[in-house]
Amino acid sequence: MLSDTYRKKTPHPFLVANMVKRASYVSLQSALSHYGLIPEYVPYVTNVTTGRPETIFSSIGNFIFKHIKTALFHSYKYIELGEGQSAFIASPEKSLLDLLYLTPVSDSIHYQNELRLQNLEALDIVKLFHLAQESKSQKLLRAVKNIVLQVNEQHG
View 1 (tube, rainbow, N blue to C red):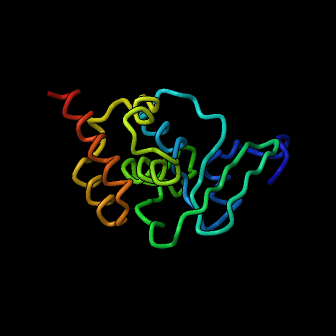
View 2: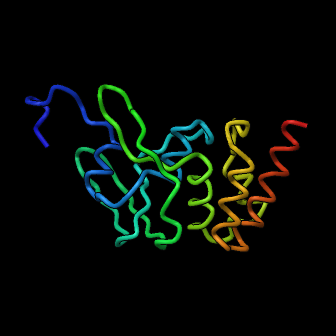
């Protein structure tokens, strides 16, 4: 990458993460924050990959790459980020499922309350449930059932 002096525009952190590890997509807290599903600022970019997990700290950003099995590496799309930049990002539903899958005890109500999920109307509940079923993970199915209850409580 060119130094600041020679750059016409600053690359988006999601684009940089995709370039650092080609077989990856932005997911987990980074994507959830991008979609407005969690209120927190995320100081690093979290990606999912079928390759080795690693954390990279650099002057252009901090990047965390989490390993996921090949069968779960899907449901991402190439999204326009502005200024002619695009990156591979998981759908909102897949971002949430990736986080739940990679976090121990994430099927507990206590953990899900700590996430402070918001704007749940942006989630496609049918797609969320379908992706959880496709994963064949009992933990994800339990977690999604809890989230569906949350959505129903919020929207009566």
